Length: 175
Image (cartoon, rainbow, N blue to C red; front, top):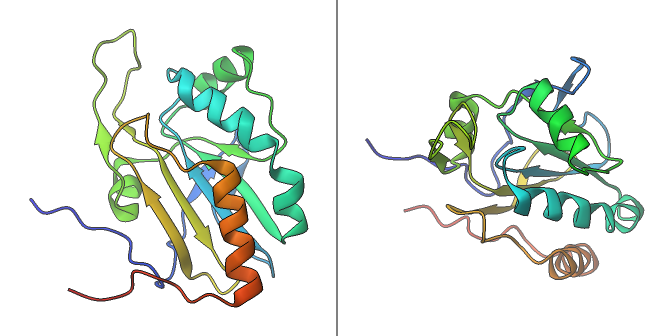
């Protein structure tokens, strides 16, 4: 079976998930703001915990750029609470319940747990999406392993460049 991917410049899909308390939210905000969606592997991933906490250091700058940050995984609300107990300390929404269909729609790599001690479900490998206020996907980063993630300082400076230069959406050539 061939994998599909979300195409740059196309509309980001509507995906509604839940937070640790069970409240629902959409991955993309309905507003005049941009959305930065960070998909992480789950509570079992120490690299994800470190990356999300590091992302918190950039939320003030991203907010000044009119960008809302949200993180999402296939974890359950209970697993998110475990991650918070392990030291997740972020101000942005962290959502749970990403399904296999969601992962496929986003073109994410999907892994099965190596053992029951890792987690109890298939999970997405890291992904990052920048969506403009019109709902178009402007930047996409998809990895097949936890070790491949955008450098956050470079990402934020790149977003600033895009905004300052009215840089077009790249990677739109159809093949």
